[in-house]
Image 1 (spheres, one colour):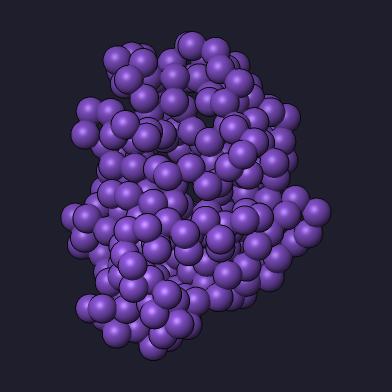
Image 2 (cartoon, rainbow, N blue to C red):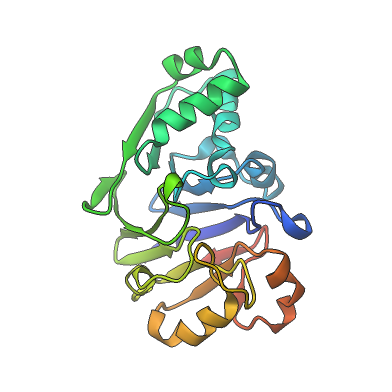
Length: 247
């Protein structure tokens, strides 16, 4: 079976605690390259990993907070101005994602209208009620416990018998059982160590539920100040910016 690789581009929270980059994961799988989320630090962080951002075929967005989508205008600017990109780019996003990305881009760069006219960008909006087939991947999305205004979702991506799960940003929800179930790799946020929140997970809850999540491999990420202060007490596999994982 062909090896699939995930590179942790950014494993930090919105505040880049302890210098970690914002959320972004570069996945090489089945002859395609995709980003899971694209925070504002992503272009620099991708290059620091010695990867090519312009080789990306699709971007999959978990929710519409700035630390997960604000790198997209800069990605598109480079594709338009520097790369002169001709191949299509697919952006898979929650409802209202296209409008928000277009508006953010226009605020940052007044000529963004031309950018969107010239680039071959294919927006696909998802919902929890349907399975998408995108670029040879099967994708399912699950509403999770985060700020409702940003349409938060976790996701499962499948291809050739492999499954990649991603929690997105979320407090505890039983949807995580489904997202993680038998996944070859489950990327799970761990913003706090023990602080309870409706919108973010803590390590102690994950630790208590780990046997029920039933992923083959669990990768903790999206660390904040509290979890980083107790970092050595967090057992299991932890994401680090630049870390590569074959799954």
